[in-house]
Length: 215
Image (cartoon, rainbow, N blue to C red; front, side):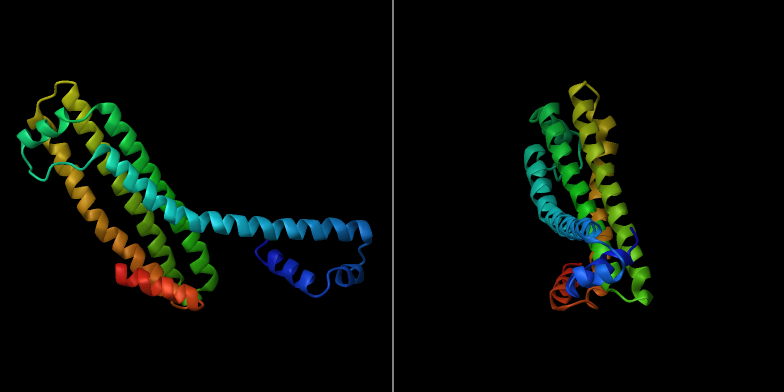
């Protein structure tokens, strides 16, 4: 079904449905089939739209729950601090926390995809490059965050396996730097998508302005 078909279906239903369809040569059975198909399509679009919007809220909740389970890395960049951190956690605890945190980032990617579709629909063609840039930033943000999560899990599992803390210090630095740099990437996503949403309706303009301020 093409992009124009949902819009055509809505027009058909608004114009009286049966008269329009019968004028097109469709009998009662065909009319019922087409009407049900159009209604189902509209319902599916609404459900998917709500899922896309809800994924943004779910992303924040799941990410923070995961972070709370595994806890943050120590602020001191020393082998002693890493050894103390590893001794206070189990590999299973950090594994569960990191799994939930990564799930939160994947939910964010679903939300970013939803925003891409919304911005593509309301934004002018001349701003489409900003929309693409924002979506690319979202993908990069999730990838960098996943790298940081993996590095943290390597630190804990290596420490539990008896690997010297000085050896795992490099993974700590990787985790810390990747986490820090991810904020800059997230800011690019928020700003670019925010500018595109400013061309939409009142609600979208409010979301776009908030995204720009957050970025």
